[in-house]
Length: 288
Image (cartoon, rainbow, N blue to C red; front, side, top):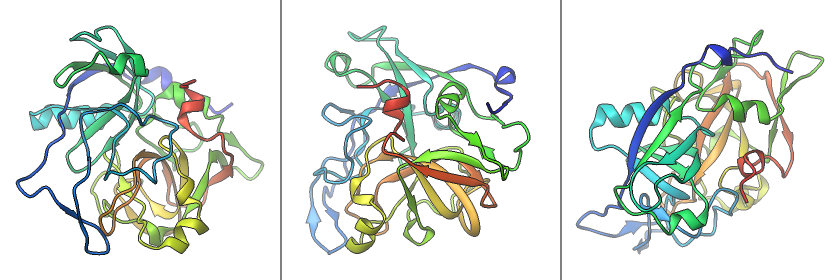
């Protein structure tokens, strides 16, 4: 059993409102073949796609599963997106669904949303601008004896449920569904921080999609990013490893694709992926 500093972590409230989808004066998006398309996108309440569902063949762009929340005041929204961690408990505190409980499932850059899972019966009671309170906890989590591994964006209870083990070589074995090479990482690379938002697996090359099982990805899947350093920003670094979670759907834009929020990162190859179909947070959080 890995030892962490979880007993010293702070649990603090952050809160956001369900954010309406927005659209510019020109509603078209241009896909990677030059075709203009009108599609559903980020924000709002997505009723028919949740954590554990396929994320690649949706007729949509950057679709966020479940409920998307944010704040209009930038400093408040920054605290929401940085302090919220995957697996944090969330509760509806206004509207007809008041009292409903769920979990944070990821953070999305750009428009800066936090995505939250709630059971489908609760989604039907929700509305735009309903307020959701999150018990934010997880930033600052460290693994004793493995301080070179930066842990980020994950609730300590969910971290424990992943069953990460130290092998005889001192490496940490983490469950994943697939490994992604660095040359497929696109939009979001170069961000100054890995402690909010995400970056995208590019999906313009159909052969690469099949080669690395990207076509089989689901919301909530854990993936290993090879030669990807997310310790204090996002960059290529040979030998580095990042473990992340799929937070939004595939995209039609060049340089975009399913989004990955980082959970663990190391500048060396200390993190080892153990492939298993079970490596989805829906299974660890008992979401059906």
